[in-house]
Image (cartoon, rainbow, N blue to C red; front, side, top):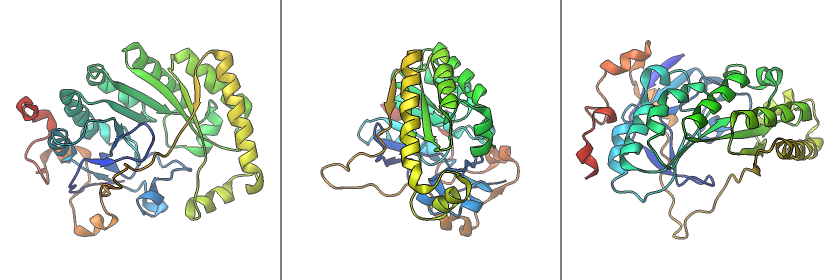
Length: 312
């Protein structure tokens, strides 16, 4: 895997996902490389290269510190097209530094991840009154997990991390999505049981969404359920999961993936680093820790060194 530092003009972008006002993506690309990932299509990156190169927005914390002083206060979603706690975050700590900025500003934040690494930052998250952590867990079956997301942390590790988050006093929930049509009621019943046992505040479920393109073709090749039957099968599984959640006493909801644009019709610029960034000869970091010795593209210090008076 290559790790490339890129410049970014903004840290926040308006979000069209329900529940989020702003989207914050410290990285582009993702080592977890889930079979069903929609992000390569969103950012127009070839699926084959999505997990080969991770682009790092090292200046994101410093940019964020400036933007929180002038933008409308709202819920920040971390992240929407990448995992903020993929393996490179352990060394680079860009997500952690963004959380430190958010904590100082007192903005609400919602983190979504597949990684237990988020528990490293509980000392920061616990200081944010309106913080929550969602764990993306599509199944309670480790065998199914290995089929759909073989590079991701095990199911059990994610539920143990969720329990640790709740014990620290931070709201934690399960994002059960996407529900694959070839999953089983038994696997989803186990998901509900584990969620209840870990103290999840909610299980939010979603079906598989694809558009015409490589992801749709990939699912067609790998899913044993005929396209015509997938929607019906998924609905049956969603109902089974809802019933299982009820039996284990954990709240259940369906994800609302989209919200209308503001009435003024203004849409923010795409905050994602353009695909052409790799052609601009940015530094390639063979060792993640090298990022600490490189000058930040838009700031001389990271947000951890930002003075508190920046928020005065």
